[in-house]
Structure formats: structure tokens, C-alpha cells
Length: 87
Image (cartoon, rainbow, N blue to C red):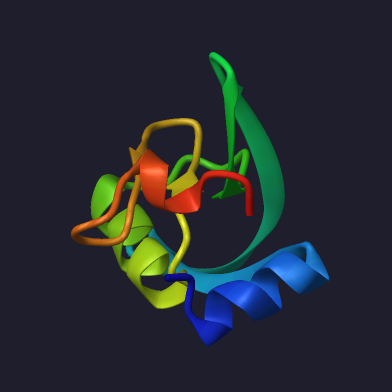
């Protein structure tokens, strides 16, 4: 269920995306992070930067993986945590 772009990102352990923050385009590096929730573990892209939800949603669609920043977490449309367990 994980696309080719997601497989490439998981293999490399990080990805860089252009993000619109406060009207300025910036290149931000996201790292692959394993998140444990109860007995389950899933993988997501993480950045310490403050990024708006609309941009997180766009990046998650582009990457095919969940994306989290300090402000929120976004999943690709039609997907949830269960789709990214044990990657």
C-alpha cells in the first residue's frame, strides 16, 4: 500500500520538501521517525519547524507517509495509522 516515493524516503531515512511558511518558500528536511502508540509502532516524517496544516497535508500526499511538525500531524487522504504499521 506504500508508494514508490514512500519506499525511497524510508530507505534514505530523510527527505527535503519545499514548504510555504509565512509566505516564504523554504526547503525543510524531514526525518523518518518511528512512533510507538500502545503496542503498535508506525513510521512518519518529522520536522521540528512550525508548519501549517495545509502544507503538512500537501507534503503527506506527496510523500505518501504521515507527516508531523510541532503544530499537527497529517495523513494522506483516505489513510490512517493502521496503513503505516510496522513499515
